[in-house]
Amino acid sequence: MIGFLPEIYEDELVYSWIARYYCRTGYNAYIYANEDFYTHSRTRPDMEYMNQLSEDATTAISGYISIEKLIREHTMIPQIRFTEPETLRKAWIRMLTQAGSLREVVLGSRSGRNRQLRYCPLCVREDRELYGETWWHRSAQIHGVGICVKHKCRLVSTGIQLKADNKLLHIAALEVRDSKPQYVDNEKELAFVSYIAEVFYKEINFDNTISINSFLASRIDGTEYLREQRHLRNMKLLYEDMMKFYQGYPFVTLNKPHQLVTCLKGQRHGLFDICQIAYFLGITANELVALDVSGTDLEKSVRYDNAETDYEISEGTRRKIPNQNCYLHAKKKRKNTHYFKSLSGKQNIDWAKIDNELLPFVHDKCVEIYGVQDSKPGRVGIKTIEKALHLPDNRFQYLPRCRAEILLFKEKKEEHWARKTVWGFRQLTNQRPESVTFTKLIHLTGIHADRMMKCLPYLSMFCDKDEEMKIKQLVIPRFEV
Ligand SMILES: [Zn+2]
Image 1 (cartoon, rainbow, N blue to C red):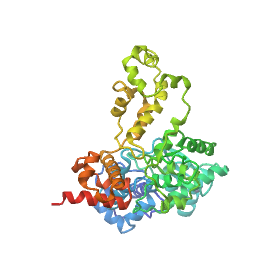
Image 2 (tube, protein in one colour):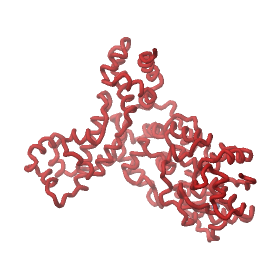
Image 3 (cartoon, rainbow, N blue to C red):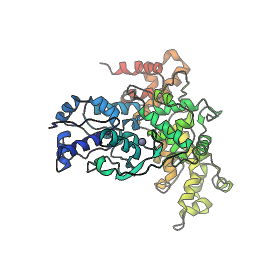
Image 4 (tube, rainbow, N blue to C red):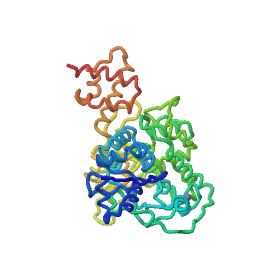
Protein backbone atom coordinates (compact mmCIF):
# COMPACT_ATOMS: atom_id res chain seq x y z
CA MET A 1 0.00 0.00 0.00
CA ILE A 2 1.27 3.43 -0.85
CA GLY A 3 1.04 5.52 2.32
CA PHE A 4 2.45 8.73 0.92
CA LEU A 5 3.85 9.95 -2.37
CA PRO A 6 6.80 12.29 -2.73
CA GLU A 7 6.21 15.33 -4.93
CA ILE A 8 6.92 14.58 -8.58
CA TYR A 9 9.20 17.26 -10.02
CA GLU A 10 8.85 18.91 -13.40
CA ASP A 11 10.18 16.71 -16.21
CA GLU A 12 11.01 13.88 -13.78
CA LEU A 13 10.88 10.30 -15.07
CA VAL A 14 8.33 8.00 -13.39
CA TYR A 15 11.27 5.68 -12.74
CA SER A 16 13.06 8.44 -10.83
CA TRP A 17 9.93 9.22 -8.83
CA ILE A 18 9.51 5.59 -7.73
CA ALA A 19 13.24 5.44 -6.87
CA ARG A 20 12.85 8.45 -4.59
CA TYR A 21 9.77 6.87 -3.04
CA TYR A 22 11.81 3.74 -2.31
CA CYS A 23 14.52 5.89 -0.73
CA ARG A 24 12.05 7.71 1.53
CA THR A 25 10.24 4.58 2.75
CA GLY A 26 13.45 3.15 4.13
CA TYR A 27 12.62 -0.30 2.74
CA ASN A 28 15.68 -2.50 2.76
CA ALA A 29 14.98 -3.94 -0.70
CA TYR A 30 13.53 -2.37 -3.79
CA ILE A 31 11.09 -5.23 -4.34
CA TYR A 32 9.02 -3.85 -1.44
CA ALA A 33 8.64 -0.58 -3.34
CA ASN A 34 7.74 -2.68 -6.36
CA GLU A 35 5.00 -4.39 -4.38
CA ASP A 36 3.50 -0.98 -3.66
CA PHE A 37 3.39 0.05 -7.32
CA TYR A 38 3.13 -3.02 -9.48
CA THR A 39 0.96 -6.09 -9.77
CA HIS A 40 4.04 -8.30 -9.57
CA SER A 41 6.78 -7.67 -7.03
CA ARG A 42 9.33 -9.06 -9.44
CA THR A 43 8.55 -6.44 -12.09
CA ARG A 44 11.69 -4.89 -13.44
CA PRO A 45 11.18 -1.14 -13.50
CA ASP A 46 11.15 0.41 -16.95
CA MET A 47 13.51 3.37 -16.94
CA GLU A 48 12.04 5.26 -19.89
CA TYR A 49 8.37 4.33 -19.89
CA MET A 50 6.07 2.91 -17.25
CA ASN A 51 5.17 -0.62 -16.22
CA GLN A 52 1.63 -1.74 -15.58
CA LEU A 53 0.58 -0.37 -12.20
CA SER A 54 -1.45 -2.34 -9.66
CA GLU A 55 -5.05 -1.30 -9.05
CA ASP A 56 -4.25 0.09 -5.61
CA ALA A 57 -1.34 2.12 -6.96
CA THR A 58 -3.47 3.48 -9.82
CA THR A 59 -6.05 4.71 -7.31
CA ALA A 60 -3.45 6.25 -5.01
CA ILE A 61 -1.59 7.96 -7.88
CA SER A 62 -4.76 9.21 -9.57
CA GLY A 63 -5.60 11.15 -6.40
CA TYR A 64 -2.33 13.02 -6.83
CA ILE A 65 -1.72 13.26 -10.59
CA SER A 66 -3.80 11.96 -13.51
CA ILE A 67 -2.40 8.89 -15.25
CA GLU A 68 -2.65 10.78 -18.55
CA LYS A 69 -0.47 13.63 -17.28
CA LEU A 70 1.94 11.14 -15.76
CA ILE A 71 2.44 9.37 -19.08
CA ARG A 72 2.57 12.52 -21.19
CA GLU A 73 4.88 14.55 -18.98
CA HIS A 74 6.91 11.97 -17.09
CA THR A 75 7.76 9.19 -19.54
CA MET A 76 9.78 9.17 -22.75
CA ILE A 77 6.64 8.62 -24.83
CA PRO A 78 7.49 11.60 -27.11
CA GLN A 79 10.39 9.52 -28.33
CA ILE A 80 8.01 7.13 -30.08
CA ARG A 81 5.54 9.80 -31.19
CA PHE A 82 6.12 9.01 -34.88
CA THR A 83 5.14 5.34 -34.58
CA GLU A 84 2.38 4.24 -36.99
CA PRO A 85 -0.75 6.14 -35.81
CA GLU A 86 -2.83 3.01 -35.24
CA THR A 87 -0.13 1.30 -33.16
CA LEU A 88 0.59 4.43 -31.17
CA ARG A 89 -3.06 4.89 -30.34
CA LYS A 90 -3.33 1.27 -29.23
CA ALA A 91 -0.29 1.67 -26.98
CA TRP A 92 -1.64 4.91 -25.57
CA ILE A 93 -5.00 3.38 -24.63
CA ARG A 94 -3.25 0.41 -23.12
CA MET A 95 -1.14 2.62 -20.91
CA LEU A 96 -4.00 4.93 -20.05
CA THR A 97 -6.24 2.10 -18.90
CA GLN A 98 -3.29 0.30 -17.32
CA ALA A 99 -4.22 -2.77 -19.35
CA GLY A 100 -0.59 -3.44 -20.16
CA SER A 101 2.65 -1.72 -20.88
CA LEU A 102 3.55 0.26 -23.94
CA ARG A 103 6.53 -1.90 -24.71
CA GLU A 104 4.33 -4.90 -25.48
CA VAL A 105 2.72 -2.94 -28.32
CA VAL A 106 5.42 -0.66 -29.64
CA LEU A 107 8.91 -1.59 -28.64
CA GLY A 108 8.92 -5.30 -27.83
CA SER A 109 11.92 -6.14 -25.71
CA ARG A 110 14.10 -3.52 -27.38
CA SER A 111 15.81 -1.13 -25.05
CA GLY A 112 18.21 1.75 -25.30
CA ARG A 113 21.05 -0.15 -27.01
CA ASN A 114 24.13 1.14 -25.27
CA ARG A 115 22.47 4.30 -24.13
CA GLN A 116 23.08 5.36 -20.56
CA LEU A 117 21.24 7.31 -17.93
CA ARG A 118 22.60 10.87 -18.11
CA TYR A 119 22.43 14.16 -16.28
CA CYS A 120 23.42 17.79 -16.74
CA PRO A 121 25.84 19.00 -14.03
CA LEU A 122 24.28 22.47 -14.00
CA CYS A 123 20.67 21.23 -13.78
CA VAL A 124 21.78 19.04 -10.86
CA ARG A 125 23.34 22.05 -9.13
CA GLU A 126 20.15 24.07 -9.60
CA ASP A 127 17.96 21.20 -8.33
CA ARG A 128 20.06 20.86 -5.20
CA GLU A 129 20.05 24.58 -4.50
CA LEU A 130 16.31 24.97 -5.02
CA TYR A 131 14.90 21.66 -3.78
CA GLY A 132 17.70 20.11 -1.77
CA GLU A 133 17.80 17.01 -3.99
CA THR A 134 18.12 16.05 -7.62
CA TRP A 135 16.25 13.62 -9.90
CA TRP A 136 16.46 11.98 -13.32
CA HIS A 137 15.32 14.49 -15.92
CA ARG A 138 13.63 13.44 -19.14
CA SER A 139 15.48 16.19 -21.02
CA ALA A 140 18.81 14.43 -20.39
CA GLN A 141 17.66 11.09 -21.84
CA ILE A 142 16.45 12.14 -25.31
CA HIS A 143 18.12 9.99 -27.94
CA GLY A 144 20.44 12.08 -30.11
CA VAL A 145 20.55 15.03 -27.73
CA GLY A 146 23.89 14.93 -25.93
CA ILE A 147 23.70 18.51 -24.72
CA CYS A 148 21.57 20.23 -22.08
CA VAL A 149 19.69 22.69 -24.25
CA LYS A 150 19.11 25.03 -21.30
CA HIS A 151 22.73 25.26 -20.16
CA LYS A 152 24.49 24.51 -23.46
CA CYS A 153 26.81 21.97 -21.83
CA ARG A 154 27.48 18.29 -22.49
CA LEU A 155 25.42 15.74 -20.57
CA VAL A 156 27.35 13.38 -18.32
CA SER A 157 26.84 9.60 -18.59
CA THR A 158 26.43 7.62 -15.39
CA GLY A 159 27.47 4.25 -16.78
CA ILE A 160 24.00 2.90 -15.92
CA GLN A 161 22.42 1.29 -18.98
CA LEU A 162 19.01 2.65 -20.01
CA LYS A 163 17.17 -0.62 -20.02
CA ALA A 164 13.62 -1.83 -20.06
CA ASP A 165 14.36 -4.62 -17.63
CA ASN A 166 16.62 -2.90 -15.19
CA LYS A 167 16.98 -4.84 -11.96
CA LEU A 168 17.53 -1.89 -9.64
CA LEU A 169 16.03 1.42 -8.73
CA HIS A 170 18.93 3.82 -9.18
CA ILE A 171 18.50 6.88 -7.03
CA ALA A 172 19.76 10.06 -8.67
CA ALA A 173 21.02 11.50 -5.38
CA LEU A 174 23.42 8.56 -4.99
CA GLU A 175 24.59 8.22 -8.59
CA VAL A 176 25.14 11.81 -9.63
CA ARG A 177 28.58 13.27 -8.97
CA ASP A 178 29.49 16.92 -8.97
CA SER A 179 31.34 17.51 -12.20
CA LYS A 180 32.60 20.50 -14.14
CA PRO A 181 30.36 21.50 -17.04
CA GLN A 182 31.84 21.14 -20.48
CA TYR A 183 30.36 23.93 -22.60
CA VAL A 184 29.52 23.53 -26.30
CA ASP A 185 29.94 26.43 -28.69
CA ASN A 186 29.24 24.67 -31.98
CA GLU A 187 26.21 26.70 -33.12
CA LYS A 188 25.19 24.17 -35.78
CA GLU A 189 25.09 21.33 -33.28
CA LEU A 190 23.26 23.43 -30.69
CA ALA A 191 20.61 24.43 -33.22
CA PHE A 192 20.02 20.82 -34.23
CA VAL A 193 19.70 19.44 -30.70
CA SER A 194 17.40 22.35 -29.76
CA TYR A 195 15.22 21.34 -32.69
CA ILE A 196 14.98 17.72 -31.49
CA ALA A 197 14.19 18.88 -27.95
CA GLU A 198 11.54 21.25 -29.29
CA VAL A 199 9.84 18.42 -31.17
CA PHE A 200 10.11 16.20 -28.08
CA TYR A 201 8.21 18.65 -25.87
CA LYS A 202 5.37 19.37 -28.32
CA GLU A 203 2.08 17.83 -27.27
CA ILE A 204 1.26 14.49 -28.90
CA ASN A 205 -2.00 14.15 -30.78
CA PHE A 206 -3.07 10.54 -30.35
CA ASP A 207 -6.02 11.00 -32.73
CA ASN A 208 -3.74 11.75 -35.64
CA THR A 209 -4.21 9.43 -38.63
CA ILE A 210 -1.41 10.62 -40.92
CA SER A 211 1.72 8.51 -40.84
CA ILE A 212 5.08 10.24 -40.69
CA ASN A 213 6.27 8.69 -43.95
CA SER A 214 3.27 10.07 -45.87
CA PHE A 215 4.00 13.49 -44.40
CA LEU A 216 7.71 13.39 -45.28
CA ALA A 217 6.82 12.10 -48.74
CA SER A 218 4.50 15.06 -49.27
CA ARG A 219 7.33 17.42 -48.36
CA ILE A 220 9.93 15.69 -50.54
CA ASP A 221 7.61 15.90 -53.53
CA GLY A 222 7.89 19.65 -53.58
CA THR A 223 11.66 19.51 -53.95
CA GLU A 224 14.37 18.58 -56.40
CA TYR A 225 14.40 15.08 -54.89
CA LEU A 226 11.39 14.02 -56.91
CA ARG A 227 12.56 12.81 -60.24
CA GLU A 228 10.93 13.79 -63.49
CA GLN A 229 9.54 10.32 -63.88
CA ARG A 230 6.83 10.77 -61.28
CA HIS A 231 7.14 7.36 -59.75
CA LEU A 232 10.59 7.71 -58.27
CA ARG A 233 12.13 9.84 -55.59
CA ASN A 234 15.81 10.48 -55.99
CA MET A 235 17.25 8.88 -52.90
CA LYS A 236 20.84 9.07 -54.03
CA LEU A 237 20.78 12.85 -54.22
CA LEU A 238 18.84 13.19 -50.97
CA TYR A 239 21.24 10.88 -49.17
CA GLU A 240 24.36 12.61 -50.45
CA ASP A 241 23.03 16.08 -49.64
CA MET A 242 22.05 14.95 -46.17
CA MET A 243 25.50 13.53 -45.53
CA LYS A 244 27.10 16.82 -46.59
CA PHE A 245 24.69 18.72 -44.36
CA TYR A 246 25.44 16.64 -41.26
CA GLN A 247 29.19 16.56 -41.72
CA GLY A 248 30.89 17.55 -38.49
CA TYR A 249 28.01 16.49 -36.24
CA PRO A 250 29.15 14.15 -33.46
CA PHE A 251 26.83 11.39 -34.57
CA VAL A 252 23.91 10.70 -36.86
CA THR A 253 22.02 7.44 -37.21
CA LEU A 254 20.99 7.63 -40.86
CA ASN A 255 24.44 7.30 -42.32
CA LYS A 256 23.75 4.43 -44.69
CA PRO A 257 21.54 4.80 -47.77
CA HIS A 258 19.30 1.89 -46.83
CA GLN A 259 18.68 3.39 -43.38
CA LEU A 260 17.33 6.53 -45.00
CA VAL A 261 15.16 4.49 -47.33
CA THR A 262 13.70 2.32 -44.55
CA CYS A 263 12.93 5.47 -42.61
CA LEU A 264 11.13 7.07 -45.53
CA LYS A 265 9.19 3.89 -46.18
CA GLY A 266 7.85 4.02 -42.64
CA GLN A 267 9.81 1.10 -41.22
CA ARG A 268 11.82 3.22 -38.79
CA HIS A 269 10.18 5.96 -36.80
CA GLY A 270 12.47 6.93 -33.95
CA LEU A 271 12.34 10.59 -32.99
CA PHE A 272 16.04 11.09 -33.73
CA ASP A 273 15.84 9.41 -37.17
CA ILE A 274 12.82 11.43 -38.23
CA CYS A 275 14.25 14.70 -36.91
CA GLN A 276 17.39 14.24 -39.01
CA ILE A 277 15.35 14.13 -42.20
CA ALA A 278 12.88 16.82 -41.21
CA TYR A 279 15.54 19.28 -40.01
CA PHE A 280 17.48 18.78 -43.22
CA LEU A 281 14.34 19.43 -45.29
CA GLY A 282 13.73 22.67 -43.37
CA ILE A 283 10.52 21.47 -41.72
CA THR A 284 9.84 23.43 -38.53
CA ALA A 285 9.03 21.65 -35.27
CA ASN A 286 5.45 22.92 -35.41
CA GLU A 287 4.97 21.63 -38.95
CA LEU A 288 6.50 18.28 -38.07
CA VAL A 289 4.18 17.57 -35.16
CA ALA A 290 1.10 18.89 -36.99
CA LEU A 291 1.62 16.33 -39.81
CA ASP A 292 -0.57 18.38 -42.09
CA VAL A 293 -0.78 16.96 -45.60
CA SER A 294 -3.81 18.92 -46.79
CA GLY A 295 -3.36 20.54 -50.17
CA THR A 296 -0.63 18.13 -51.18
CA ASP A 297 -1.07 15.51 -53.80
CA LEU A 298 -0.16 12.24 -52.14
CA GLU A 299 0.46 10.25 -55.25
CA LYS A 300 0.18 6.68 -54.01
CA SER A 301 2.28 5.18 -56.73
CA VAL A 302 5.32 7.33 -56.06
CA ARG A 303 8.05 5.11 -54.76
CA TYR A 304 11.45 5.60 -53.28
CA ASP A 305 14.22 4.37 -55.43
CA ASN A 306 17.07 2.79 -53.59
CA ALA A 307 20.02 5.07 -53.17
CA GLU A 308 22.41 2.17 -53.48
CA THR A 309 21.25 1.06 -56.89
CA ASP A 310 22.09 4.44 -58.30
CA TYR A 311 25.77 3.98 -57.76
CA GLU A 312 27.77 2.97 -60.75
CA ILE A 313 28.08 -0.71 -61.58
CA SER A 314 31.36 -1.52 -63.22
CA GLU A 315 31.43 -2.14 -66.94
CA GLY A 316 32.91 -5.56 -66.29
CA THR A 317 29.94 -6.56 -64.18
CA ARG A 318 27.53 -5.29 -66.77
CA ARG A 319 29.15 -7.45 -69.37
CA LYS A 320 28.99 -10.43 -67.10
CA ILE A 321 25.32 -9.88 -66.35
CA PRO A 322 23.75 -8.30 -69.43
CA ASN A 323 20.20 -8.91 -68.20
CA GLN A 324 18.40 -11.20 -65.87
CA ASN A 325 17.88 -13.80 -68.60
CA CYS A 326 21.55 -14.47 -68.24
CA TYR A 327 20.74 -16.40 -65.08
CA LEU A 328 18.59 -18.85 -66.98
CA HIS A 329 21.29 -19.16 -69.57
CA ALA A 330 23.94 -19.42 -66.93
CA LYS A 331 22.08 -22.13 -65.10
CA LYS A 332 22.09 -24.27 -68.22
CA LYS A 333 25.71 -23.70 -69.00
CA ARG A 334 26.98 -23.17 -65.50
CA LYS A 335 30.47 -24.45 -66.09
CA ASN A 336 31.13 -22.21 -69.05
CA THR A 337 29.88 -19.05 -67.50
CA HIS A 338 32.50 -16.86 -66.06
CA TYR A 339 30.12 -15.46 -63.47
CA PHE A 340 28.96 -18.75 -62.08
CA LYS A 341 32.37 -20.24 -62.28
CA SER A 342 33.31 -18.16 -59.30
CA LEU A 343 30.20 -19.33 -57.50
CA SER A 344 30.71 -23.00 -58.14
CA GLY A 345 34.24 -23.18 -56.74
CA LYS A 346 34.26 -24.15 -53.11
CA GLN A 347 37.00 -21.79 -52.02
CA ASN A 348 37.50 -18.05 -52.30
CA ILE A 349 33.98 -16.98 -53.01
CA ASP A 350 33.75 -13.25 -52.59
CA TRP A 351 30.15 -13.09 -51.41
CA ALA A 352 30.35 -9.40 -50.58
CA LYS A 353 31.25 -8.58 -54.18
CA ILE A 354 28.52 -10.77 -55.57
CA ASP A 355 26.10 -9.21 -53.11
CA ASN A 356 26.92 -5.74 -54.42
CA GLU A 357 26.82 -6.74 -58.06
CA LEU A 358 23.55 -8.56 -57.81
CA LEU A 359 21.81 -5.84 -55.85
CA PRO A 360 20.59 -3.71 -58.80
CA PHE A 361 19.03 -6.76 -60.44
CA VAL A 362 17.36 -7.82 -57.24
CA HIS A 363 16.00 -4.30 -56.82
CA ASP A 364 14.64 -4.15 -60.38
CA LYS A 365 13.02 -7.55 -60.00
CA CYS A 366 11.42 -6.52 -56.71
CA VAL A 367 10.01 -3.36 -58.29
CA GLU A 368 8.76 -5.35 -61.29
CA ILE A 369 6.99 -7.93 -59.14
CA TYR A 370 5.69 -5.40 -56.62
CA GLY A 371 4.09 -3.58 -59.54
CA VAL A 372 4.64 -0.07 -60.79
CA GLN A 373 1.83 2.16 -62.00
CA ASP A 374 -0.72 0.05 -63.88
CA SER A 375 0.84 -3.39 -63.70
CA LYS A 376 -0.78 -6.05 -61.54
CA PRO A 377 0.67 -6.02 -58.01
CA GLY A 378 2.57 -9.08 -56.89
CA ARG A 379 3.89 -10.08 -53.50
CA VAL A 380 7.66 -9.91 -53.10
CA GLY A 381 9.41 -12.56 -51.05
CA ILE A 382 12.81 -14.22 -50.87
CA LYS A 383 11.64 -17.36 -52.68
CA THR A 384 9.81 -15.38 -55.38
CA ILE A 385 12.91 -13.38 -56.23
CA GLU A 386 15.13 -16.44 -56.10
CA LYS A 387 12.87 -18.12 -58.62
CA ALA A 388 12.48 -15.05 -60.81
CA LEU A 389 16.25 -14.63 -61.08
CA HIS A 390 16.78 -18.38 -61.52
CA LEU A 391 19.12 -18.53 -58.57
CA PRO A 392 19.87 -21.69 -56.59
CA ASP A 393 17.87 -22.29 -53.40
CA ASN A 394 18.86 -20.32 -50.30
CA ARG A 395 21.32 -18.20 -52.23
CA PHE A 396 20.24 -15.06 -50.38
CA GLN A 397 21.44 -16.39 -47.08
CA TYR A 398 24.94 -15.47 -48.27
CA LEU A 399 23.87 -12.11 -49.68
CA PRO A 400 22.78 -9.85 -46.83
CA ARG A 401 22.33 -6.64 -48.83
CA CYS A 402 20.20 -8.32 -51.48
CA ARG A 403 18.20 -9.99 -48.75
CA ALA A 404 17.65 -6.67 -46.98
CA GLU A 405 16.55 -5.12 -50.27
CA ILE A 406 13.91 -7.83 -50.73
CA LEU A 407 12.69 -7.39 -47.18
CA LEU A 408 12.07 -3.71 -47.90
CA PHE A 409 9.25 -4.78 -50.17
CA LYS A 410 7.76 -7.16 -47.66
CA GLU A 411 4.11 -6.60 -46.86
CA LYS A 412 1.46 -8.33 -44.78
CA LYS A 413 -0.89 -10.67 -46.61
CA GLU A 414 -3.84 -8.41 -45.86
CA GLU A 415 -1.94 -5.36 -47.08
CA HIS A 416 -1.13 -7.12 -50.30
CA TRP A 417 -4.73 -8.13 -50.90
CA ALA A 418 -5.83 -4.57 -50.17
CA ARG A 419 -3.32 -3.14 -52.64
CA LYS A 420 -4.43 -5.60 -55.29
CA THR A 421 -8.10 -4.90 -54.63
CA VAL A 422 -7.54 -1.16 -55.08
CA TRP A 423 -5.61 -1.84 -58.28
CA GLY A 424 -8.44 -4.06 -59.60
CA PHE A 425 -11.06 -1.52 -58.69
CA ARG A 426 -9.17 1.23 -60.52
CA GLN A 427 -8.73 -0.94 -63.61
CA LEU A 428 -12.45 -1.68 -63.77
CA THR A 429 -13.40 1.93 -63.08
CA ASN A 430 -11.15 3.11 -65.89
CA GLN A 431 -12.82 0.72 -68.32
CA ARG A 432 -16.51 1.16 -67.52
CA PRO A 433 -17.18 2.97 -64.27
CA GLU A 434 -20.92 2.22 -64.36
CA SER A 435 -20.58 -1.55 -64.50
CA VAL A 436 -18.06 -2.39 -61.75
CA THR A 437 -19.29 -5.45 -59.88
CA PHE A 438 -18.02 -7.64 -57.08
CA THR A 439 -17.76 -10.66 -59.38
CA LYS A 440 -15.67 -8.75 -61.89
CA LEU A 441 -13.39 -7.53 -59.12
CA ILE A 442 -12.88 -11.07 -57.80
CA HIS A 443 -12.28 -12.35 -61.30
CA LEU A 444 -9.72 -9.69 -62.20
CA THR A 445 -7.73 -9.76 -58.97
CA GLY A 446 -7.99 -13.50 -58.31
CA ILE A 447 -8.51 -12.79 -54.59
CA HIS A 448 -10.80 -15.13 -52.71
CA ALA A 449 -14.00 -13.44 -51.53
CA ASP A 450 -13.25 -14.09 -47.84
CA ARG A 451 -9.83 -12.56 -48.19
CA MET A 452 -11.26 -9.48 -49.81
CA MET A 453 -13.42 -9.01 -46.74
CA LYS A 454 -10.39 -9.38 -44.46
CA CYS A 455 -8.38 -6.76 -46.30
CA LEU A 456 -10.98 -4.00 -46.00
CA PRO A 457 -9.35 -2.35 -42.94
CA TYR A 458 -6.14 -1.92 -44.94
CA LEU A 459 -7.68 -0.20 -47.98
CA SER A 460 -7.04 3.29 -46.65
CA MET A 461 -3.29 2.70 -47.01
CA PHE A 462 -3.66 2.63 -50.77
CA CYS A 463 -6.62 4.78 -51.74
CA ASP A 464 -8.61 7.81 -50.69
CA LYS A 465 -11.81 7.84 -48.62
CA ASP A 466 -14.08 7.98 -51.64
CA GLU A 467 -12.60 4.92 -53.31
CA GLU A 468 -12.47 3.08 -50.01
CA MET A 469 -16.20 3.67 -49.54
CA LYS A 470 -17.03 2.51 -53.06
CA ILE A 471 -15.04 -0.70 -52.63
CA LYS A 472 -16.66 -1.39 -49.29
CA GLN A 473 -20.08 -0.87 -50.88
CA LEU A 474 -19.20 -3.57 -53.40
CA VAL A 475 -17.81 -6.07 -50.91
CA ILE A 476 -19.72 -5.75 -47.64
CA PRO A 477 -23.26 -6.48 -48.96
CA ARG A 478 -21.96 -9.88 -50.10
CA PHE A 479 -21.36 -10.90 -46.53
CA GLU A 480 -24.52 -9.55 -44.99
CA VAL A 481 -27.10 -12.23 -44.38
ZN1 LIG B 1 21.19 21.75 -17.68
